[in-house]
Length: 458
Image (tube, rainbow, N blue to C red; front, side, top):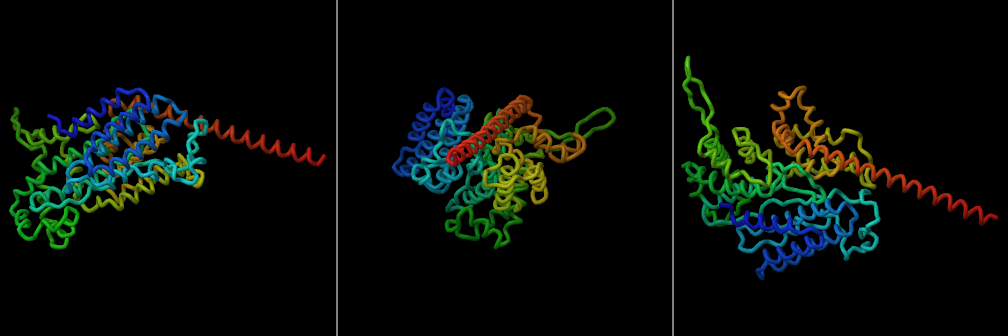
């Protein structure tokens, strides 16, 4: 049976899919926000969320692009807003949702939407006839902040909350999204908000209870007044008191119980060892599967990835620094702003390759997929060419970058590649036409000025 949050999101998506205009999308989105944020304590959050949604649709309705594409983008935007509200409403140690959470998701700077309070509003307000491809603001990426710290009176609850907090700092990092990017490919699992919800549930209901079967872990629970420590400070205390090795060992053992188990199978001439799927692994697959994202069949490789999120190398700060570099390089090479220098060809590829040095291979692979889902001028062709830097043949590439190869092998990839290339070609043609028109206007302006000067001299 699906969870209440899943039912809310499913119903919301049905409503969004039913409407056929952006104005109707705006109306139905506002009604859903009103319904989800009804309490008196939600008043500030509701008002600020409605304001940001209004700004998005005010901007989007003024655009003169393909109506079907703008409608798809609007549905994506509204669906993500509703998903994020549901996420905020989940119990995070406070009975009331924190207004600053949704505000962080939807800041004007990240959306690059002008406000009426801006002194240059009239100059920057989108005009239907204005060139839409002439980029002047940073790529619009909405950043999902890490989870808020929670407090719990008992060690058992705090341990689960602390694990969710630490792992959620990584899963939310990969959930950033660009409302102007629409893909026909399914979203990779690590980039999906619903996957983050399901991962939280696995930690709460499977991993933390398994860790608590360890006597040494339970012994930690007797040493402090846990009501005075929140889920973020938990890790500082664990480091300071030498608990990390015990917690890491229990965490790893909990994941190891979910792996395929080796067993001997009889055959003529002697037996041989095979890996069998256990009921625990079947349960994990069922818990993490969903139609909202693409997920490979979970085996030891995927368990290695999920278990690795507890490691210090997944600190969010170096990941944010890497993302800033990728975003700036993308703009300078492929989607340049008027204030930026032109980067050399291949600069973004080299920046992505550099991510394989400080981070694990899977982390760098998902950074490449995250770039595809946030940078409009990237195509699956770019990702395919990028894989060729990781081995001279497919077997070598599968060993080094299995998640990228898996993603590019999905059934939707062939159609998505054609759509990407057509969209980028159309955008480039439009940009060239606009440059040509600008050059012609400049020539006409010079001729007019010269003619006026000659007339004055006569």
